Amino acid sequence: MMPHRLGMLLGIPIRVEVAALRNHAALSEVSQPYRTAFHFQPSKNWMNDPNGPMYYKGVYHIFYQYNPYGALWGNISWGHAISYDLINWVNLDIALIPNEPYDINGCFSGSATIFPNGEPAILYTGADTNKHQVQNLAFPKNVSDPLLTEWVKSSLNPILSPPEGIDAMSYRDPSTAWMGQDGQWRVVIGSELDHHGLAILYKSKDFRHWIRTSSPLHSSNKTIMWECPDFYPVSTNGKNGLDTSAIQKNIKHVLKVSFKTHDYYILGKYDPKSDKYDVDIDFMDSRGSLQYDYGRFYASKSFYDGHKKRRVLWSWINEGDSESDDNKKGWSGLQSIPRSIWLSENGDQLVQWPVKELKKLRKRKVHYKNKELKGGSLFQISGITASQADVEITFSLSNLNEAEVLTSDVIDPQILCTQKNASVSGSQGPFGLLVLASKDLTEHTAVFFRVFRSANSFRVLMCSDQKRLDLT
Image (cartoon, rainbow, N blue to C red; front, side, top):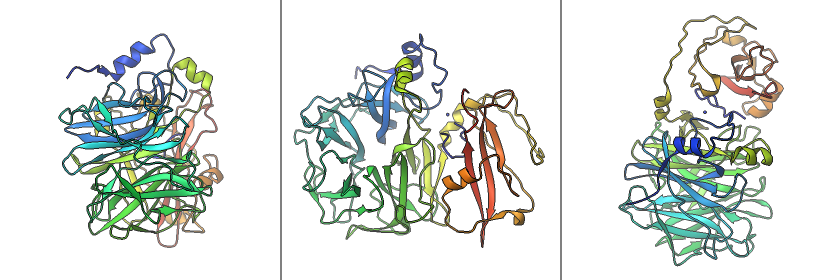
């Protein structure tokens, strides 16, 4: 499924290979009509969750769940790539491999934390000899190396094991840690209790020895287990991002968790003294539960980019085809285009936009201005390929007061998009784009909008309708 965002329509001696060149060499004998050109992918094989993204000594790093030996899940290690602009990536050697008793069955997801002295550390989940999930720690072998090519696992591993009452197979994905006013570190681990979502909170004075707090950071009896928790502050005054440990006025905190193939988030006020998190609207407490994305977008991870004062969001985009297809083409999975993320002006949801560096990929410009579109009409945009087009479009509408009325302030956009798909006409919509279209339009994806009227404002619904997408 297509991510719901306007502007992006879909996309010391070391061994270093440029991703594009390596991709071409590794897969040259296989037809690759569905391999992307702009999203990050390793040269071949399986990839899933983004792990430990960071900006260190002038270099952006992305780690990711990786199978070095095949296009299906297994042998999970931490792949590693670097960039100077978040767009052009260079593959490095694998950062973490499952070779110790505490991670022999997989180096699962985790996060990076930057210490006050500027040095990084990785917390990650390992599957031990019993396939129980434990938490482990790793440090760079050489902190002066901006490429961070080698990592050393702590001799104290595992530093955390499943506490009593927690399923040892449901205890994973440590978040980026943050420091409280007391000088102690905090971190949350995704888990479940009685089959319901749980973010277990731990505290540490030295980042090596951790104590579970008496209460979780948050929990819910309306969801299943939480994977890949992410907890971070956002400013209520502007778009600038904040360091994960930021403690100041005019902020809210975001808790994102992954379940049921989607990434859900809530907003609230976090008290750094008591570690109490008071949420505005809890998970699944309304028909409009907040999600990062309504397409294939899962196990996301954000980081604070101190270089450009922004928070950047990554996510795994999984494959929709079969395992046999994955084996045939030699790869599976890609990373989303990184997005900047901030709090909306009214403070009730997050706003996302592809990072500004994406404009570097723009080459041939096709520009149209002041085109009138009547109901049911089509205007063909010539000179571009829809699968690799970065589109900016502005629609001006008249008679907005005739827009359909929303019966409730809280609406589930997925249900509304299904009920009012591209073939359902309304007073202010649908209007938008047909992409990935065949010449006779029997095949296409509609990316469209509708305008609704509520008591005191207007709301815009953005949808994609793929019912006519099969072969393209």
